Image (cartoon, rainbow, N blue to C red; front, side, top):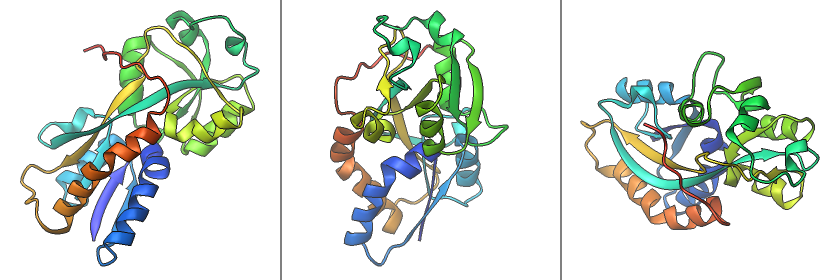
Length: 222
């Protein structure tokens, strides 16, 4: 068994197609996927409770081996009726700070890596709701004037249905590096090594899905 930890958006939206293909081609190697915060992923790797972690970075990554897997497009999204979606032009950082947000939160206490880095570039956000699933965030944003920052692959169906719209923003990072973490002392052989190779071989197809459309890659502060 291969034990994997990933954040909710990655686990629920990006990895399932890959895991289906893995199961079809490697029927004798089961996978256990757990939805965890970045901090919990790092702890699970150190305590030998996980073999592989998928994360956008975390304070606790020191001492772990990180392999860049893909650049993942993220979007600031709102419902089409939102005042900021009415052709006002690029949304300024000040507008983003003044808006209220629905945020994908792994737990009540975890300050996830994406939010840390987003706020480092934008400033402190007014998070009205912290929700534990991508679908909950999307449902709230579709029916309120809250904004959300989510990966494109997670919101693509809602964008196609015109249930959400992507806002053009100034100075915000729209492409994040998704990394695969392992312990540096892990002997990369057998099923774990095979799964890592499989992920690298599949990344082109996944990236085309996750990053379809025009995407700007902006540098993270720090």
